Length: 283
Image (cartoon, rainbow, N blue to C red; front, top):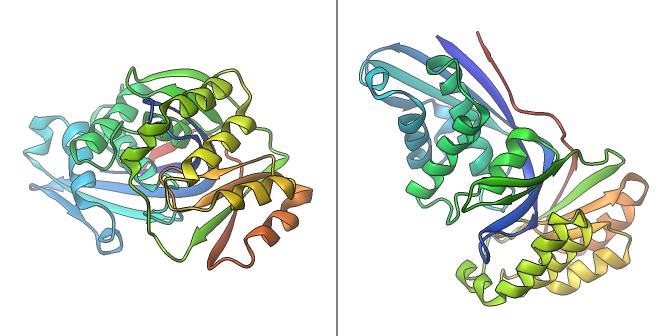
């Protein structure tokens, strides 16, 4: 048996670490997971997946696959990802959701979306990949669109499709250096305000406030956020815990936003908005 799942990436609108509540937006960079099952035992990563978090992958499989099946199955996992890892672009959430979806397709055919998502969220907490479980990230990767969540209650508060006249410009710095993410809690009230804006549908002001607050702690320069806004960005923020910076912009303004990042050391990625739900099929 084999199942192949496709789950998309996302960027942050509001970081969830300070309050346990976050907001995210789906982009069309994707992760593809292939899970195959034969007689035997153990979880085996194929060569092209060795740079991924093996602890996370093993834990997702352990949670998603019934124990009786796990004990008599050799499970091979192969991953292909377009999402840079370790930059706050939700690669872990996309990977865990894709593996969970493929495993559920094979072993729990009557699965619900919630079961798929929570296997990845629980695995992220258990392996310390995420403090809150990144339920906001998992939902945007899985469902697409713009999602506002309460991570601790594992509840979607608001979800809607994102306008497709927008595009996403992502600056990926050469350095992966991050600040102390636990210090984000010092700005609890600021992030609470940003989340309240997102909850009320004011996504772009929420994102800018999140960007200005987060960049002071996450080793980014708040002036970059300000310059991107001045150049016409609809929204801009450090994504996740950084160090990548994502700008939402109308397509006809993208060249001006690229100029903001042009004198910085790193690479630029352009991504389209994603409103599509994750997909899976048996082969």
